[in-house]
Image 1 (tube, rainbow, N blue to C red):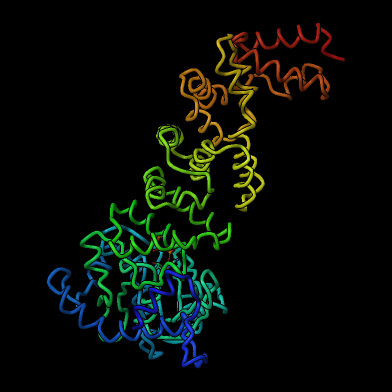
Image 2 (cartoon, rainbow, N blue to C red; image 1 turned 180 degrees about the vertical axis):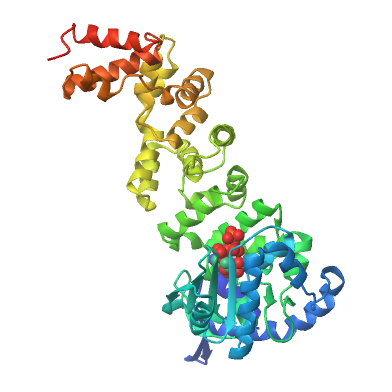
Length: 492
Ligand code: CTP
């Protein structure tokens, strides 16, 4: 049966199955054939199944969410959707809002990233809509998509309903124009495969072919078919992201398919770039520690590095990273840092140095990110030794040790040092020393007769040190110090 072939393809990682008559190969079934056939099966049964099973739980397949849209979306965006719907009517195309924003709408979460799908030429539709709304339109011919950028900052992603077939796993998809039902079938999870109609028979009608509303109610993440992770292994990380974000759990079959993908080591085929993008998204959510633990349970940490695994030490470090990041967020509500990088630093902390080097090579970090990662893991040994030692240390010395480090690196320093001493010094640096400035500026020094040059710079630094250490308080203290440093010869 097709399902046996599907299992064989997944388990043995085969791209095609030969059909043999006697000794001769007479044909071949490819993954594309298989997905097409499974599509057809699903399309025949999906609608009736959804009708029967979900009616009671989810308000039925004819649920209308026009009111919900109106109450949730800013008035301006709602008008845009209505305008777009009327335009689609005039063009005799069907138009739907799809994906994450529908999921969030039904969950009562605000999401203004609107994705719409057109049954027809999406790019032509986007251009017309752009003219109508006096909006700029950015087109991606290759994917049949466009972004309509509205003058007031809102945007609308427009796509052509399509069926995608992957020639081989992890390849970019081959795109075909199609119906919304098929478009939804190529998506990652049932909860992301919901659509809302924007024109024709009924504005606001929910299209739920694959049980998405039921899974939202049951809090389950479920793929639509068995080859979903083979087509796109990054979906495994997306699954964990949604699980953690919404407090959902993976369906039984989906968990088994992930185990299959791990066994097949599908993630080795992902480029460093794609894997890093997923990790960034995952570690930028609210509870990265939870997601990392989940990755460990599912056997995924080894795809970051074969030597990476869950341990008490890692758990301790990640707990401490949580604490440091929360503290930082509270302190600097307005300052942005790459939280994902701090969690990655936490992971690198439990790897041997050669594995850290491998990881830096495997992923395309920017020069700055790579530098920060290196500083966190190996470059800050001396600073830590000095900060943690019992010898007395002045604020100025702490300032000199830490002032070249990024905030991300400072947070991991706080997290990875068990004792209180380092934490205290780093926190004093971030909250106090960093803000200290002498009263006298370079201009004041010039007015005192000093000429810019190495000596000039040194004096400014010494002024700063003195202020940090409390050796000067008033402006006149600072002037006295300048005179002392130049031995009264300020006109040299
Ligand atoms: N999608 C998919 N497979 C992927 C990535 C995306 O099927 N590997 C589909 C999903 O239907 C998803 C939609 O494309 O809803 C848009 O993707 P994206 O914007 O990345 O995700 P959202 O679901 O909007 O999630 P988020 O809230 O994190 O932005």
